[in-house]
Amino acid sequence: MTAPRAVAVVSGGLGAIGTAVCRELASSLGLAVVALDLPADGARYGAFVAALAGFDARHIACDVALEQQCADAIARIEVEVGPIEVLVNNAGITRDSTLRNMSREQWDQVRAVNYDGLFNLTRPALEPMLARGRGRIVNIASVVGQSGAFGQTNYAAAKAATHGFTMALAREVARKGITVNSVSPGYVRSPMTDAMPEAVRAQVLASVPAGRIGEPADIARAVAFLCAPEASYLTGVNLPVNGGLFIS
Image 1 (tube, rainbow, N blue to C red):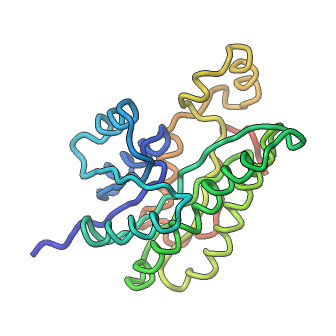
Image 2 (image 1 turned 90 degrees about the vertical axis):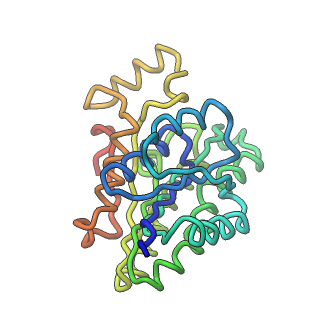
């Protein structure tokens, strides 16, 4: 009987970065991939299917802000798809406003997805990894968590906390064969950046020493590097992928 293929779970897997991560993990590491995301709409799901054509990939509806949905999704994947060896916590939202004008709802929405989602998904996924003595967890943080950004106190706080979570968990599971790392993207091409007014886009480009906005594939390759067997001695790391926008 053939053993089931190892699985990578990518939250926010139907977005621009999530889809690129799914494709890279499938193509370079040979993993079956499961994109956890909200119920799929036609355009995003169609783009995912096209990008992952020929690979072992699927979408499972899951809201990372809901703890029970996350636990159910992880249990389902372990039974129906295969052993989870990679978890990429990529799901994230923005609700921008200056703090003095920010509503409690804007704060709570960002916290629930970007921060609580880490706990909701990582905790159930960690158990089978611990039982098997191996695993890779990669958390998508942001340059905003390192440098701050006007009108994004909620998002910056959540993304700074993402790497704090990463470092603490890395210490807890290092002896169990599990690595935990962060990737902090800068500006990356997406529907959000594509919709920027031309003047704002020019200002962004001028601020990036590399002279371009990043591509989702830039982030995907960094994630795959941290998930590769050769990266087994890297844990608790924050890998900035920002074209030199922020250098610490």
